[in-house]
Image (cartoon, rainbow, N blue to C red; front, side, top):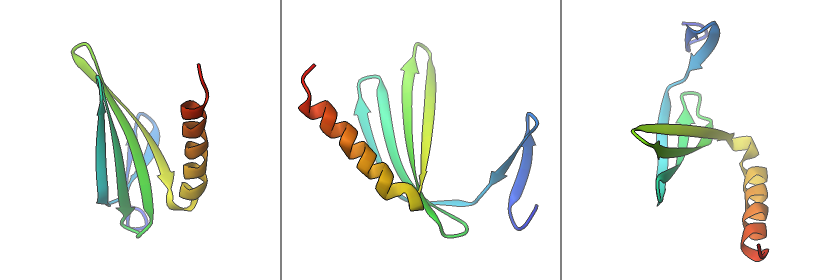
Length: 92
């Protein structure tokens, strides 16, 4: 344990494992894909959004994740809103 946090070495890469508390969770099913929107809080009290995509590929499942930290959430939301507006309003 370093500085109150658990550290582990995996494949030569050091990773930090923070205690996380889930504050909010929403899932959206879309065909073979499921999207998850989870707001979590670290043991240090900072909030972050985890957007995950889970999809079936034959007999296996593949999962992708994006983490957006609290200090970036408004600019992320603005960029997402612009992309959604473009897709909804533009033909083709």
